[in-house]
Length: 524
Image 1 (cartoon, rainbow, N blue to C red):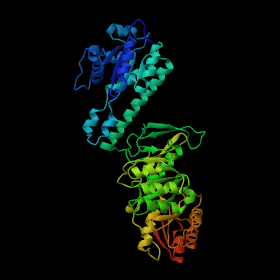
Image 2: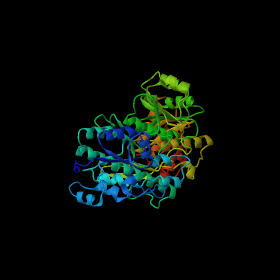
Image 3: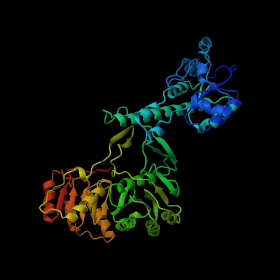
Image 4: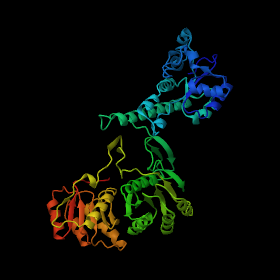
């Protein structure tokens, strides 16, 4: 409901983001709005030669305590919350004017805390109090008041006023945007303060998630599914969400999911590494002295699956490696911390190939810098710690008669790093810093052992002397028998099965070395 039309319109403008402010104000003046403003916003409008009334002239009270209190006054909040046809007499009795349009966006808290020189004191000073209060008041009273937080909405609101009055649907939509804006703001503050002061709640209740939309996607996993991509505002360099798309079509839903899997995996290696991922599973991984050698080794392990895959590196992508990729295979996405100029030139020959530069990777490897893993279920959300486990945090236990050689132990460590990123049930065969066969996502562990052997046989990669990693315990000896049949000589697995003795006995029969980690890596 609008207030009496006999009164002139009034707009209160107080924005941190000055984008589009002056054109909006000019448009409102042309519509006979009175402009009321505060601080820097008022200064910007006056610098543009526009007439503006100070909030202090409305409240009859100056800004105090270094500007912390400006708009927290009945003359402002009654003007926003008053209902036409209900509160007219109250406003008239106290000489309070109606406010018809509120234009507010908040102190840039997230921008401030992202700065390297930000202190807790500086962050706290950039917690907006009056702005959220006004936004909530205006959004609550959206039946009468139009509320604006996003400069992208300025022109359509001006058009609506030029036509007479914003529709109730438009006002409701803008109110929803305002409440989202304040919710996101409060979530960022609570998240920051938890990081600074710690929290007694390992898993907070309620769980407040307020992520920003990066983009809508063409579709989801399948063309009949709508999809969008969101980012955690706290994320920075070294992620898919922060990556720069240097060339190629926009990322698809599956590109993002597979690219994230590839990037997480390649970050787990300290040496120069290449990871090729297909359908969220690595199909070829290798470490080598250079990206080119790592790529060639990774590709050689399963070129069939690599077709149309994601190729990720943990070192800058050079021209020779880029040329080798596009000459060797069809690839959907190439990911690297940095893409050298010569590499860009070579990749430009395949303009549809998506190339992502993700920036500097974190010093800590793999999953360790991320807080939670989230997974939706119908009507709910599963939340868990990221899988930070690695061999640095466990005491390896040799359980067979034969101890592993230094070379076998190196192969087992490599295979164990890889198996963490393979969908369960997972079995990995590896030797000399590269995978030879990967069995992923099978319903039985013995079948994963067979699939991994089939993969190696398809590429004529002998398994003699190779190591085997299993993401969870081996429940029966059959997996060991299959591995031994193909020449595997060393096995690393969590242990913990009721048949551990049977499995260890099988390894001894085959002259294998077996090491237990006491830690599993299920990845569903």
